[in-house]
Image (tube, rainbow, N blue to C red; front, side, top):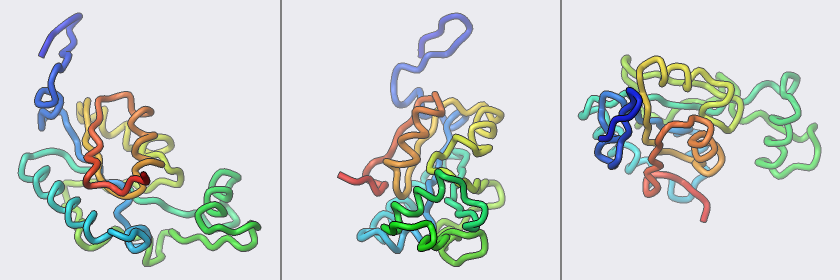
Length: 178
């Protein structure tokens, strides 16, 4: 670790992955998302391994869930995203898949968040923009994170840039399109 201007500047992955300043973000491991992925069980098994390792190491854990708004409250961005995901041509054909009380909205049982862990709901693809996650990370002194989960190329990868902190996407524990 180097130091300059009262700042610690990590030089290695080991220095970045200090459990005191590292968090694990488990991205959108929801019933309605995992069941759509061909290798969903394989990804789930690997995410569980990483989650157990993070807990054993004392790393803070945050979960995200994608949430749909009722059609009457969807804005342009959420409506266009729903139309694209559902491959429909009209807003009238959209069905909100991830309403708060819908079965598909919930995290899969294997995730089983502990009382010491947080779940953040989001209506955008980003894990950071428009969510309290970034505030919570900074308030806990987190300056790096590892991220695992589903649809990483859309929300997790984008969030890595938005978060402006060192990040490690554990790619063999993610669903990332080739």
